[in-house]
Length: 342
Image 1 (cartoon, rainbow, N blue to C red):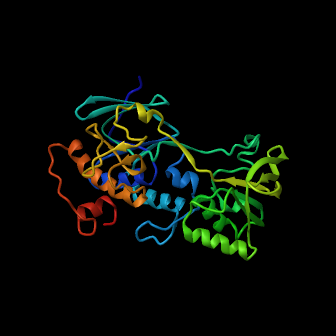
Image 2 (cartoon, helix red, strand yellow; image 1 turned 90 degrees about the vertical axis):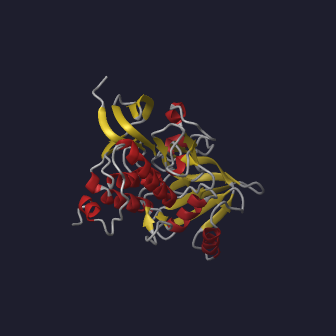
Image 3 (cartoon, rainbow, N blue to C red; image 1 turned 30 degrees about the vertical axis):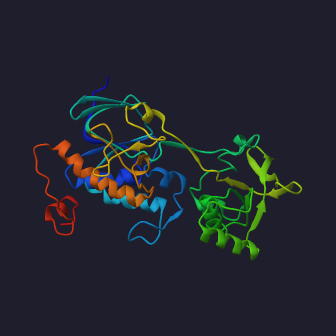
């Protein structure tokens, strides 16, 4: 067994909530390491919609997923967190009170007093449409996420789906695409009404095409898409010429090893209290989408609130003999020195 890495807190997940937890812990002189299965920080924001606008972060009228990630990374710079990316936590063992030994699939071992699970909904993968041979086009002409909008400039795009992602990307990509077609199996949507209204206005003006139906087959060679064949519930089959297809059928979330960590689970989520967002295991917390409690809202801003209260409780595990004095960053010179602003 390699020598264990010693840390005050191990955060599992480097999405927005995990990153902000670094900030709240850092204000209390608590050191943190972060482990994430992805090869970069930012979680779903950076992986699935880095350029998609987010409108409900306080004081930021609009920010992209990558922009939010970059801002959080800048904010936590003073606390020098250490990231272990492309790794998955496989096992958690209690070795003290409080103390845990955590091992990853890469053989890395951590010893920590506190664990914060900020793993979103667990590991995730897009739902693949049931279209024969679609695998050959994935990553070349078929994409399940938009990481760079510019790659679709002047392309003939087909977006398939009826949820928020499909409608959002229809509105965002329509101005740069050579031609954009939205396809959904029915004329009803699971997206925000305002987005649906804007899409219908674009279709009525001839700026985009909207078609009812489902993709039945793909045409192309060597992963390069030329067209798709589709069929509506009623009517004749038809063909849509396109250079790229973006299917947005949602995500399949898998807890993976989280299910084996000895935590209470409720429908693949981790129940926590609302005082400190602690699980049934003392010293293990869950914040962000993976935690659940009465009245829970799966919003980034709620995860930030959860991180703040978690840090207050974690302090007592890390420094059991110290008294915690609550301070404000606006008036505390000691906090401002930690942040490097004075």
